[in-house]
Length: 436
Image (cartoon, rainbow, N blue to C red; front, side):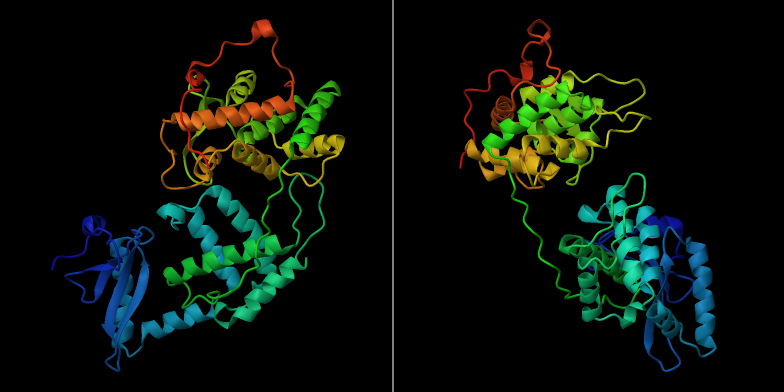
């Protein structure tokens, strides 16, 4: 058996399931373990003074080098020779750890890319922003000082009830940013974050066990609000009136694009010019909630994006008024439009759901609609620079139906200035499409 080296650890392949070990040829009991996620940790196996076989984790490869891990293993073996049991000390340390310490560990490791989330990829920065907010706003104030080992299901579900009741809600401060609030939705999402970070901590041996297993979360409210045909028309009239009353043109264009595409608000506002392919009739998102995607868009959406002027040194289609970031105030514009149109209960998600509902009204199947919306689903066209004719037809008909109901677009080019039809959208009418 050879001496454990960096080259040997790098060459150790992760198993498809279970775990594999590679042991050092010089220091008995010192080795490295690999698991399916690719994580490699240094371990030490020994027998204590009672003759019981024990195994402890020394540290993660990448944080510790092979030589530093070997040095720590020698120290632990020296303790064993003196009659101590390092496994007991490690267990005592894990049992004393607080919720706040586990949360800090999770954020530190996840932000460094050392914790894998969905599809065994590092957790996205946008997810970590939400996680940090929930941790600092709700979790730490309610249970941060508690030792993890003392938590019971009743404690965690009690935290959920406290969040829902508004116990951690705060009044809005001056400046930008959301207001920490209560509600069952906020509470359930916070518990999901808590369960996830505890599961990671358990897998990394930071805590002995996960006390959140079996917690029951509040059921989410299904968001099924959609705009009726009359409401879409009223919103279109409100847009035209808002343009005459000098509503922010970037905000108006962003709201209109949400309706014409069914894109999420973050996808519209964060849209960059170089993601847009007008000739092909699609947008290539390098990263979304469901990873990178190619999303088809209809002719009216293509025309809207083509007409958007580019600002020098700003990559965004909808730039902010100051700086090189993207616009953020589309929601307030939507609220003003809905007030003018006397429409209630509308959010950016309502526009997305409206797009899907109109596609359903036109007879397109759930699978086709899922592809239009960019939902993660096997068997639909996503992640490739290829959009089949069924999707082109579906997005064209849905987009143009909504555009027709909205009426004239703000700042619509004169007839002489309107570009010829996009070549990528010609010849769609004769193709079959998946129907309900």
